[in-house]
Length: 325
Image (cartoon, rainbow, N blue to C red; front, top):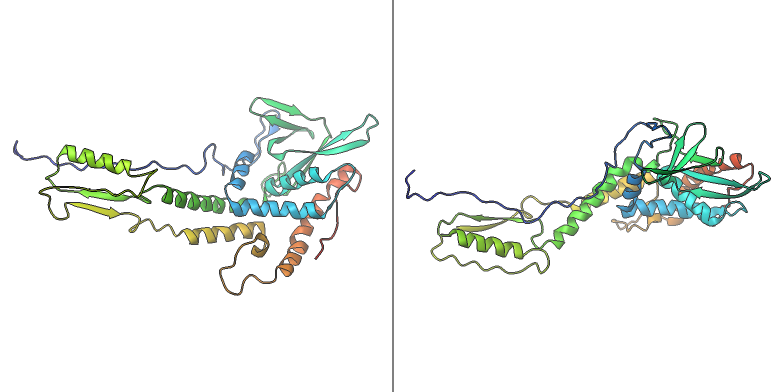
């Protein structure tokens, strides 16, 4: 190569950083229930489960729907108020377990039943339970004062696991599609583009000015026009190749629909009870018939499982009345 021959090099730079969907510890870290000397660690991150429910409208709406149906049919008791039962029911459908604290009088007769938040509860040995407060603080309940209502699990007998656990990946994918589409419209470049410059007539100052103009054209005040003047330039020396039209077909509607159906299947709730608009002209069928079938095959088993508390209390504190048609 001669000393007078110009050197050429390809320069690349990006217009945005990756947007994390969820931060913190791995939410899907399935582990055994390790004993730390005081209590057993849950098989799933309860903090992670709580985050997942807030990441997706269909999942959270389905859990609230189940809570509402349980609370609607519940008959309040002198030991268990409707407000306390609503918290108990929400914990049970969300985490697959719920806890009640029995507070007794001096005569050993129960005064009231208070729900203990399942997200912070841990089970120890010899029927001992703890409520954790951060990483160092914990509160130990009196032995025999806590009842644990739990769903059965094939892997362990210490904690319950939620019925919707299998749909977590669908919930996170649904959220990822929403966040991607939101950023797609927030960013002025949408999915981005490639600015291909091969005209030797441009000098380093021209490239720097063009880079600065492109960076200033994204974000707030996007969709700006950009004028490039290249005297002596060649045809196709400056090309704009839209990536969005070539490789960024994210199939937003398909992803949202498929993941929504996955979550409804895991929650076992008919779509017409969730207020979902049908895609076809025929609709989903009669909503009253769907509600009656759901109440018989889903609500009744939930109620039956929660009535196991009555055996522990020694009184019929969990009672339900039939739902009006």
